[in-house]
Every structure is written in C-alpha cells, then in structure tokens.
Length: 266
Length: 275
Image (cartoon, rainbow over all chains, first blue to last red; front, side):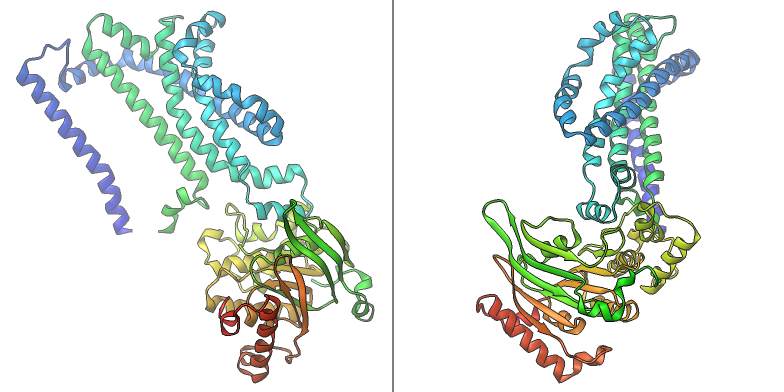
C-alpha cells in the first residue's frame, strides 16, 4: 500500500536524520571546544577506534553474545515450563511465585559475586546470572496467558468432553503464545544486560574476555574512544536482538493476533 | 448427515416423549442471588422453543444448565439424548472462535476433541461450512471475516456433529439489523432441513415470534417461566411472514405477556423496540 510504504519510509528516515544531526552536533561541539579525547571523543575518533579495534572487539562481542543467547534460550524453556506448572496447579503457583519475585527484585550486581564463587565454570556462572535477570518476564507473562483462555471456549471444550491435556494444548497454550512472545522480547534485552553485569563482576574469569570487560579495561587505560566503540557494539547488539525477536513474534502471530495482523490486511 | 441420531428418536415415539424435561429447576449464586426458581419445562423433539425475557432473568443460566455446563442448585434436568459429546450443540452470544485457527479447523474442533480425523470428517466440516453459506472461506482466519460470518462459523461448528439438541444463547444480539434478519432466515432453513430440537434464548419479541414454534416467557428475579405460548404461524416462514397481520397480532400478544411478566413496567411499544 502506498500510504504504508510512505509510513515505512518515514519510520526509517526520520530516526536516521535525528541520529545524523546529533552526531554532527557532537562532532562540531568537540572540535570547537577542544575537549580532550580522553574526556569525550568525537564521533570520528570513535569510528576510527571501531575500525582499528573492530576485529578484537568483535571477538569479545561473540563471547558476550553466546552467554546472552544461551541465557535467553534457557529462560524461554525453563520459564515456559515453570509457567506451565504454575497454570496446572494454583497451589504451586501461590507457593512459589513469591520466590520468583524475590529472585527478580534482588539486584543481580549484589548476588553475582556469590554465584561466581559457587559456580566454578565461568561460562555457566555468567549464564546463571543472565538467566536470573531474564527468566521472570517470561514466567509472569506466560502464566497470565495460560490463565486467559476464553471462558466460553472453555465451556465449549467441556461440552465436547475434552480432556485436561486437550484443553491445555488446543486452547491454553495457543492463547498464551502472544503473552510468551511479549515476555521473550523483554527478556532479550534483559539477558544482554545480565550478561554484561555478570562480566563486570567476574572480570576476565576465564580465558575469554567479553565485551563488558573490554569496556572496563578501556576505562582504566583511558582509551575512551575504544570504550565508546565497545558501547556502540553493545547497543547495536541489543537492538538486533529486539528486532529478531520482534520479527519472530510477527511471523508466528501474523494470521491471528491484533499485534501482528495489521500488516496482513494489505 | 443423518443416521447418527439414536434409534429411539424416531417420529412416533419421539413426539410423545419430551427430549428435554426440566422439573423444579432452581439456581442460586451465593446466599443472596436467586437466579432461577421452580422452572418446569418440557420440550418435544423437533420443537423450536424460544426463551424470551428481559436481561438478567436467568435465561442464559437455564441454557447452561440444560447443556450440563452449570449444575442446578435444585430440581431435575432430564435429557432423552445421550450425553455423549456432540449430541448437543451450543452457540454463544459471541462467535467464540479460536482466532489462531482457520474456519475449517474451528468447525473441526468437536471431531478433533473426539480424536476423529480423516476424509469423512473433513467432508462433514466442508458440508457444514457450505450449509451456512461460507463455501470458499474454508482457509480464512476469523479476523478476516465480518461479525455475521463469524457467527455463521460458530453455527457451522454447532451443527457439524448433527446434534439432536441445539442451544443458542442470544446468538444474533450483537449483530446489525440486516445481518440479523438474514441469519434468522438461514437458521430457519437449517432447522427445516435437519430438524434438530432448538432452544433459543433471546430478548427480542420479533425474533422469537418469527423463529419459534413455541415461546416460554420468563420473568426476572428470580427467573421463572411466566407464560408458555404456542406460535401457530404457518410454516415455512419467510420475509412475507413478517408482513402478515397474524405475525403482528402474535407480536402484540407476546409483548403484552412479557409486559405482565415484568410486573407491569411500561412496556408496549418499547418492549417491541428493544432487541
């Protein structure tokens, strides 16, 4: 559709224009005021650092990304299963959900050192930290979804003699899918944050260094352009994770859910 | 589609013995609210009975008791239909479709639950979809259909098992007038063809007179059956029926009865105007 095409154009161009204007202003301000590069580097300095240190930074990014994705996958599977158990038994939900909340509200920075002491394998320790941050939105969203099945559809299933399993698979699970996916999108960003926080606390830990440690290191050495370059890579990764999850969500829901159906209309 | 009704359901025997018999049925929700009280009602095989009453008179609750979805607090609900799944069809006020499934998959739901699959079952689904005038929309999703079409899917799903008893809970209340009249006619045609027993809940005087062979008028708080009127308008009915003086007279009479049932509140034309 023409109007939608125009909308899409606007949605890409407008943010890019804002970004470009911001970078130009930044560049001009730094150059004109003569702020030293170890306080605030100009965008061109950061770009140069990105070019020079890019390959080694990408290696570190890969380390962080592996932890993030593993934590997200574990959060999706275990979080989904926890929600399933919660929906099957009200008693279990009432007994255990306060502890899930406690785990969620405890700052990960505070418990990460403990986890790193307890779990000796660095990858597993970091994964656990990221998982603790990421699993809660999936559990709480999916539990709500599993309990949101249409009352009349439930009555209809009863009328046709459906078993509990059939109600679960044919009705509750599909109803919960959009809730689960919304939780997953939130958890994607949180998993990355969790991984970075854990790396900050763990330091080098093992033989591989993640992006967070590179940021710390660059800070100590006053290699501020590299610090910004690493930060830039982190943001891009966060955005990419969100976009991929958003795409998956739209693909899965395109036939029926309001959140994704609008594009079907054309 | 025939052949699945029980043998005892043949014409001569069936006409004597009611397919549905309620005696002394009552329903209380908590200590304070008495939704239904002392309901006695017998429905014969092949009848088209309307339960007509104001909102909150418990007619939907009564329908759910008949379907076995809600237990009565007192009294008896006897069905001469075996309670096997699929012998009773139910249509809600909302289409109540699964938005993630196609029209065909929605209509196939009763079979899917009964673990029946295969070509024969699919043919029955396609036949039911065709019977409600939705041929060509088998692969559509509910959000692609209009409100009236969704309701048709819901009716197809209720009919696909060829039920002996079809329960409809204000199915057309949320639809616009044009769609509603159209669906009234379609429902009559389906009833003439398959002759299931129908219990139809409505709060529209016009609709109940046009569709049914009998009207049970209900009063509210607690819900009781205030009057039981036979509708003797000639069959088959069509748009012309709505123009006949007999139809107008019957509407007048039902409306007056409803007015009395509601305790003499100002009714008359207003009752006839409500949906």
